[in-house]
Length: 602
Image 1 (cartoon, one colour):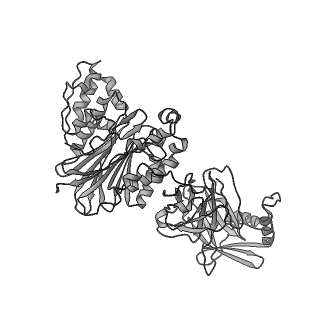
Image 2: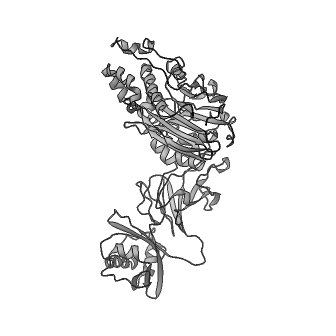
């Protein structure tokens, strides 16, 4: 993408690195992609000049940034140097005595402006009392951080600047690689000394051959319409924090035109059943459980060539899939959303900020090891308040007193104990309270080991978590929901275990262990009885030659199921071979159901 800064003209840069070189009205945005930036002054009856100072305690230099004769002036100076050296350098640059540039058509206007500014330059720094600082003895840090005013006199022309210290500012913005009609656009901004909630935003659009920008939206999130196809977008940001908001705007132009969407998505029909959220005083709540396919598993060579060879590369890209994902999640109007395989970066930079703006709070708990993915929970902030987190890695739970029998059995089979210990799965567990009723709810989210042959590992994983949970909550006073990608088929032992069936020491479940350790013995029974609320739909994962139900929502007897969102019909998948596809972002499908409280607990 091309990026340009244009106070008086437009300039295009290519092959730019990914960080801003300055945080105040910079003349360069060092960022890959097709983004452009301009800075425009707010209309004001009296022009106010600003000189921006950026100074952090752990950095040896400070940055000075201001505009003079429509030229951006930037200086990076050591804090301990005397300010006199800095003033001399500024004077030299203002008088046109800096490095000479080859004269060409692109810089003629700039050179003429410098010629006009040449003259007798006199610079002064004034403190809060209006006294002129001693330039010979004062350090840069004391001069610029503690002074109040900066004055430049060029012959008889006086230009006055007020000091602005560590002003809120956008220092980085991620390119919008995919912008589609009907899908929310969220700019991933990195602020310094500012936050998005204290900033103001405006979206503008224009056709590529036009110079007229048309106001299109005034929120951080913008959803283009079909009528916007072919338009370019510009984001105007007035950065702020809890103490101040900048007077000037930073503008980011995205020259990638808005494109048409994929047509009807697999979740569009499902959204017809979930158009409204449950009322705050409703006795019902909507729960979503969804393995969203981590980016690391979708974009590797193995994924492209072996797992999903039928999916175009752009369909597997996170920049495309996240647009479908956020539209799908918001369209379910859920009270509670549990995600598995949620990328940490996706959660922090995109999902959680967007969900926050739509009334949800997100909580993340990553898996162990090097894979940057884990479990995420979102809950409605107008309906629930967070009470406590009980999340824990599964292999740590094994060593707690509540699991001494399981640990003892595993210790008799060292290779099995080692295999169990190597698994990176976690249990994400949170206690929430309904604001209206004060009823408390434990929501439990997990993603168990995936290999088909190791059903016994999955059962022991869920068993140690349920034993742990029973020591942390009083199930007689608190309702429980357990959901996740359990990687278990409808006939596996894990499902009846959660519903209260005992797995005795002679169960066929232990046959893979007894093949090499015939004396192995272990009995398991869940201390908390649950019911399979989602049942066993025909499939929750759809890839070629494998349509399986792997995901489940369990709840205790405090709830009854009032609605279960149907899965898409098989013929809806046929044009795509499998998932993910152009109309669905994951290789799994979301489980969505409504639960009704049938018992009020104190």
